Length: 110
Image 1 (cartoon, rainbow, N blue to C red):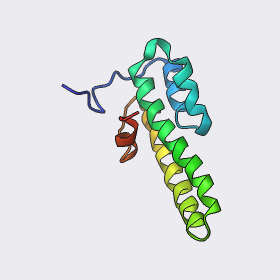
Image 2 (image 1 turned 45 degrees about the vertical axis):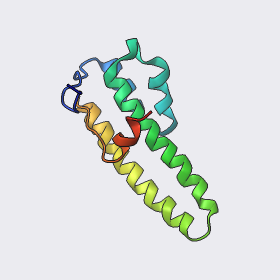
Image 3 (image 1 turned 120 degrees about the vertical axis):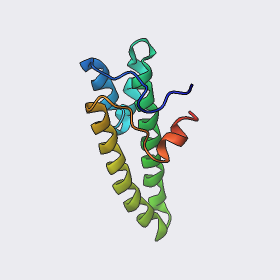
Image 4 (image 1 turned 180 degrees about the vertical axis):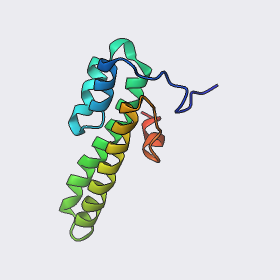
């Protein structure tokens, strides 16, 4: 049976929580991928979602070179990425593994 967002092991270890929270802090999303203890599935789950958010942010920055539409896409992306990052960090602090809408679909393919 595939693991759902509620069947992943809850994070009670402060080091695991710290690594998982780093997943949602821009470029720091790479830290959990490098220092994941024993390939912890919980940390890996959040790190993949964080990487997708970070890549989206980088694409949004490059979109600023596109006249008119680029600035709109960038502004929209900043708001959505900020909301998703905050939701992800809150889920880590609660010890949960929430699948962020659309982000998780892309992250599961990484």
